[in-house]
Each structure stands twice: as C-alpha cells, then as structure tokens.
Amino acid sequence: MSCFSSQQEKKTTVLHLGYHPPLAWNALVAFLCSRGSRYVEQLIGNRYLRTIKLGNDAGWIAAQQDPIRNRINVEVSPSLLPHLAQLQTRLHILFDLDANPVLIENHLKRDKTLKPLIIHTPGLRVPGTLNAFELSLRAIVGQQVSVKAATTLFNRFVTAFGESVDTPFPELNRTGPVASAIADAKPQTLINLGVTQRRALTIQLLAKQITDGRLKLEAGNSPQLIEQLMALPGIGPWTAQYIAMRALGDSNAIPASDLGLMHALQVEKSAGVLSRTEKWQPWRAYGVIHLWHHLSIGG
Image (cartoon, rainbow, N blue to C red; front, side, top):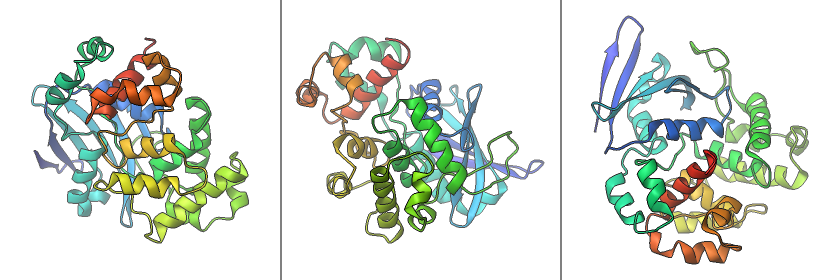
C-alpha cells in the first residue's frame, strides 16, 4: 500500500506508505533514535528524520504518521529520487509496515505477562533497519555495555566512517558507517575509537564478508544467516538473534540471553526464556519488543 506525490516548490517527493492499524508510531521511532546516532537519525516531535545512502547517492527522509489515513508520509530528498522503489522497500522493513498487529497481538495476548502490555501499547512493531551492516555494527558495539555507552561508541564510528550529507536539519549531516570503508581500515583505527582488539576484529570480519558478498544480510533465510553470523568470532546468540529480529525480518527470533527479558519473565537463564516463550511462536520477536518497551518506560 503506497503511492507518492511531488512537492515542486521544495523539489522533494512524498511517499504515502500504508499500514495495518494500530501502529504505535511514537514508541517505534523513539526506539530507533535511542539506539542510533544523532548525526544519522533524529526525532523532532513525532517526525522521524534519517539520512540514507542508496547506490552512490546520499540523502535524507522525514517521516510522519497520518493516523487518520493509516499511512506514513515520508518526504524524500531530491538526491534519492532515482531510488524510490528500493527506498519504499527499505522503509517497509524499517517501520515493519507489513505486519498485521491484530493477528499477532491476539495470539500474544494469551500470555498473562504480555496481555496488559499489549492492551497498554497496541500496535508495537519490531523496529527494522535501512542498512543491515549499520545495525549489526551497532549491535556489536552494544555488547555488554549500556545503551548510552554503545551510542557514544557508535557516534565515533559514524564520525570516522560515515559520509557527509547535506540536509535541512541541524546536526543531521552524516550517513551511517559504510561496510567497505571499515573493511579496508587498519585494525588500530577501530581500536582507537574505543573498542577492544577482539571487538575490532569482529567488526572488521563482518564488514569484509558483507563487502565481498560472502554474507548477505537479507530477509528470507534467517536460520542459515544466524549460523553464518555466529561463525564469526565475537558474535554469540544474543547478537545473532538481535540482528535476525531487526535486519532479517525474523518474527520468531529471540535474544534469549537478554538480562531484561530474564528479569521481565522472572527466569534466571536463557533456557528459561526459551521455555517461557515457546507459546509465543511464531511471533516471539513482537513479545520481546513489548517487554523491552515496558522496561524502557519504567515498568
């Protein structure tokens, strides 16, 4: 469900992307921005701003919910107009617009823990990504550190490896880190940004495998891709499952070793999370997002 219109006076194009209601837009974009870089994505009111590079062209988008028409209106910079079809596909992934929340949440509400959370915030989506490598990098630098610390590290990678881009928005001026640039960098360059030697190796191996085509982080074959990710030193089950949730569109992925999930479900080990969430299948990722959202607002 999508169409587009032109705003000639601004020389931009607006995409109108439909969705199945309800959609918890504010929670979705708050999640995205809380784990990104202010140079790459921002939230002004309920308007989500983001830079993106498609092919050799860098530009920006500005997205806002139209709850009356059940659509997201996305203003697109002129530089991205040659890539509208690809951009629409990526935006559907980013905002999880193809999900049917009524179907998913009717299933998950059978769980006594999830039911009140779903009633409180219906329409939560699994936040996707516009760039699977960028998301994977953010997940790796976020291992075993706080969200705030991970964001600081990620900002350094954006500054070092992102590309400059002109936008109408203050500080929104760089694209996310490019895999090919990190693949070609000296390991010490990564270490100087504040990651350990082992983590620098993990990041660089991932960048090289994506750059040379050995690893294609695309939706469709999540189990095999999870195995490929976990074959890389420094990527364990949590990181692989997190990437599967957000980059591979795996609705059943679950980072079972997540401490927040263990706390929310009142279990002590990842095996307990897997057992406790068995009946959530095939929508475990949505149950995870509801629990994380509940924890983020002080539940």
